[in-house]
Every structure is written in structure tokens, then in C-alpha cells.
Amino acid sequence: MSEFFAALSEHTFLQTALVAGLLASIGCGLMGTYVVVKRIAFLAGGIAHSVLGGMGAALYFGFDPLIGALAAAVIAALLIGWVRLRWQAREDTLIGALWAIGMAVGILFIAKTLGYGTDLMSYLFGNILLVPAESLWFMGSLDVLLLVVVGAYRYQFLAVAFDEEHARLRDIPVTFFYLLLLVLVAVTVVLLIQVVGLILVLALLTLPAAVAGHYVHSLGAMMLLATLLGAAVSTLGLAVSYGPDLPAGPTIVLLAGSLYVVSVLSMRALARHRARLSVIAAGTRSKTG
Image (spheres, rainbow, N blue to C red):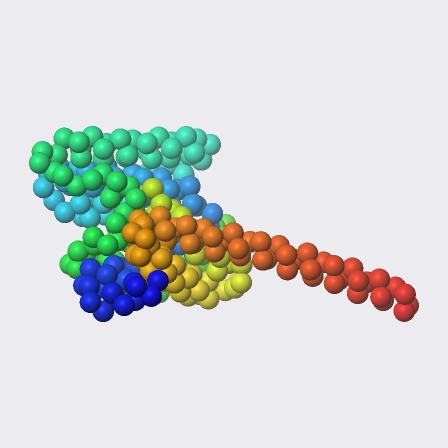
């Protein structure tokens, strides 16, 4: 790990990778919190895996794959949101179908892109060490968009996330803000693609927020803690993977998953300890009474 921090001051690509991880953690903390609270991880997964179709099409027609990813993510978010609102009884099957179709279309486009030598694995599992410096501006712009929209409509998103019926009674356009929430999740997916890839994006989107939810109960505090945890695991994942030359994306997700497991076990142990203390306290009161 010390080798990574020594090399950080010398190699520009490591500095770019570190900044990319930090930028991705902002979207991870903001929108991952809503995904966990709203329990829409499956919908977010459908959006994430549909993105490959847009990336493949963009490559085939000569455009920037990130632009294709953003367009596909937004279209998938609106389509999946419409499916959930209209056909709730069949939403799992339809979202699964969109998930598979998006992946298949992307692979076909990439396979037919003449002279294109990029490894498909870099899209599926990410390669944060190859993030170009110009992509940081794109990622930063998406972060600013997320911060502005979430800040402007935080009360509406809060109402939609926790109690849609109450939001309707307060004349909040629930359908609009629900679809807008999914679009912001789509933007976050594009932020995370270059860090951990399409396959692992759902893990990084949800795990830091899930861990944060164990310790704080305010939505704002949960976002802040999830952002800090996302930044920590992305930085630590880069450091751990650098020396033994491991893939950075899977290492980051493995650290996030390990943190989640440790957090769950700790919370359960604490709950059992409190239960034993309450039993002991109750027995003491009954004897003294």
C-alpha cells in the first residue's frame, strides 16, 4: 500500500484514477442513499445493464461511448419507471428482459465495430486506471447536476422516497419526481461505470449507503457518510490493488462488500448484547421489587 502512495506523486494516471474514484463517490453517496431507502436496487440494476446497448451503439456510429451510456441510461430509467408505474404485477420480468436486451444489443454492436480493439471486459468490470483526464470534467459535470437537482428538490424526493401516498395528498407530482429520481440514478450509473464497470456498479451504488444506514437515520447524514465511505473504499481499493497488480474495480467492490458484512455482523452482535443487558436489568428489577 505504501508503494501506491509513493507512486501517486509521480504518475499522472494514478492521480486521475484517484480523482475519478472521489468524483464517483459523490454520486454514489447521493443517489445510493435513495436507492437503498426506496428499495429500488433491482430497478437500478436494470438501468445499469441496459447502458451497454448505448455504449455499443455509440462506438459503432463513432461517438463517445460515455455519451451513448448517458443516453441509454436515461432512456432505460424512463422506460423502467414507466413499466413499474403501469405494470407492477409484471415489473420483475419486464425489467429482467430489458436488462438482458440491453446487454445483448451492446455486445452485438461492439462485435460489429470494425477496427475497434477495446477489451469488452473493461466495460463489464471497469478499469479506473485507464480513465482519461478529460473524462474527469464529464464526471464532475454530472456530480454538479446531481447536487443541484437533489438540493433543489430535496423535500419532494424525501416525500417520494418514504411515503408516496402522503406526497400525493400534499399535491406533489409523485410520478414526475419518481421518474426524475430514476434519471438521476441513471446519471450515477454512468459516473460509476469507469470505476467498477457495468457488472459491479450496483454493488458500489448500494453498499456504502447500506452501511451508512446502520449508523445514521437522517437522510442528509446518510448521504454524507455514504459519500465518505465510497471515497474511502475507492482510495483504499486503488492502494491495495496497485502493488500486486490486481483489477482495481473488483478490489474496490470487495472492500465495500467486506465493510458491509462486518457492519451487519457488528450491528447484530450489538443488538444481542443489548438484549442480554435488558434481560439482566429486568431480572434485577424483579428481584429488588
